[in-house]
Length: 111
Length: 114
Image (cartoon, rainbow over all chains, first blue to last red; front, side, top):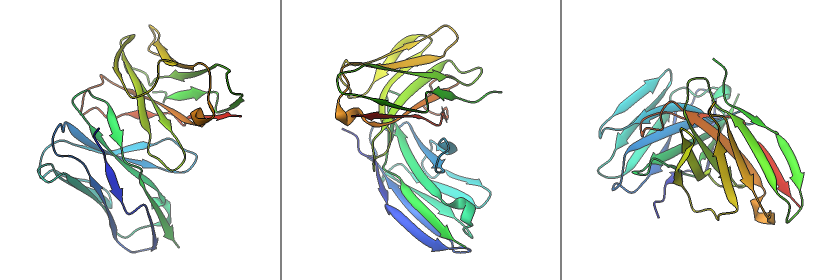
């Protein structure tokens, strides 16, 4: 059974701090790695889909890197703002095309 | 372009009952998948439909079943409800179900089984 691990489970930072979290996954059977942002009472929203080893993607203050050989991805947020408060989910897309999600990192940014 | 909509948003059932949850996929999307999110966990894959055929299933018993209609909307049916079925059920649509296609989620249907 493929397992996707995310750490930390939760994170409290001050407005303006930069932060990062980790997603670990088995490097075999890899097709793609997805990151989603999920605000309370809303629907999960796709941030990035990454497929290539060494891939780096950026959207505004948020960026992500991917290492498929060692099985991890980092998500970085530069200069956190209160509106960045959300749960950040990573998910592995395997050969059967299903998404296997981690439990998420809950980020709270204090003003 | 309308997003993914799910109904109902909340419902309460008792053990042994049956429930049907509905999902309208985003315009132009032919693939829909369903996920169950229990408290404190990430979403768990239930199954995926592509052009009205189930083409992937997670580790859920047969009492979880689904349908996709010609307009690509979908239903999730759960029979003989158990207390552990209490969860948020998410529907997601994508353009073609490919590995790199991002999913567009609805806000979910929260099911409570008493």
